Length: 407
Image 1 (cartoon, rainbow, N blue to C red):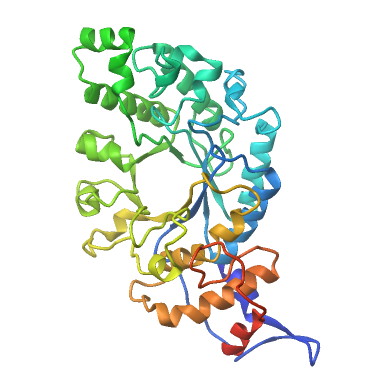
Image 2: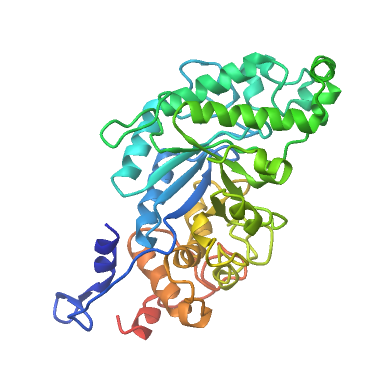
C-alpha cells in the first residue's frame, strides 16, 4: 500500500500531451519506514467532529504514509460515545446531535482499515473525566465543582470502566481473522495525565476510604491507573498511558504498558532502558508535535527526532509518535488546515532515515506535498505561515513549487 502511494505521487498528468507521465522513468526505489507507528490524534471531546470530517482526515493520512489514528474520544467537556451497557454516559455529550452511535464508530474503524490506518481509542482516566458524571454521578466525587478525577473509592467506577472497555475490546484479544470489539487494535489508550487528586481528599467519603486503606493520594492514583491497566490487559489489549504515569510510578508499571511521552521532563532513555516501549510527541516546547501549538513552524516540528538523546541501541524501543491535534480551538471548519502541512513534517521524520534532517532540503518536498494535498481535496494551509492555519497572503500559484521540482 505504501509503495502504491509512492507510485501515485510520481505520476503526473501532462496537459500538453494529455498523457500521464513519470519524470525520469525507469526508476528503482527502495524504501521502508524508520518507525512502525506513525500517527495523528484527533480530539472529539473539546469539539465534536462530524463523521464526514473524520473520514476526510483519514483519507489524508495514507498520502503521508501515516498508519494510526489516535481517537481521543471523550474528556472533561463531553462524552459523545454510545455505550450500550451504560446508556446514560452519553448524556454528557454536548447535545443529542453531537454523539457517535456504535454503528458510526464501526464504520469509521472499517473506513480507516481499508486505507491501511489503525484506530486506537482513548478514554482518559481518572482525570479528564467529568463528563462521565453527568449520567453516572456515583463514579465521581460528590462536589459537582470538583468532579474529577473519577471516584477511586467506589467499585462502581471500575465496573463501569471494565464494561466500557469491554465494548471496545470485545473482552478478548483480536486475531487476524477474528477482530474483537468496536476497536480491534491490540492497543488501547487509558490516558492517566494531569490528575489533581485534591478532589479526592476534599470528598468526605473518598477521604475516609483513603484513610481506611492506608493510602496517600499518590498511592491511590497508582492504584487507579494500575487497575485500569489490568482491565485492559485482561481484555487482550496493550495499555498506553501518558508519561505522568511513568514519572510517578516508574517500573511498578506493567511491562506491557506503552509510555506516551508528551512532557519534556520525562527521561525517554530511562523509560526505554527500563524495558518500556514509548511513543514520543512532546508538546509545548519549541519543537512541539502538538499541532494546537499554532506558533510552532513546520521547520521546528521537522527538527525533532523521536529518539533525540536516546542511544542507538535503545531507539528500537521507541515505537514512533503522533502529531497531536488537541481540539480546544479546532472543529470541522479548520481541522485540515491546522493539521496540514505541518503533519507532513512529522510524517517524514517518522518515515525517513535518521540522517534525513535538513529542513532546507525538505522545504521543496513539503511545498510540493501541500499542493498535492490541495489537489486531492485536502485543505492544507500554506507552508510558511506565521500562524499555522492562516490562508495565503496574496495571489499566487501553488504549482510553481512543483515546477521547482520539475513535476
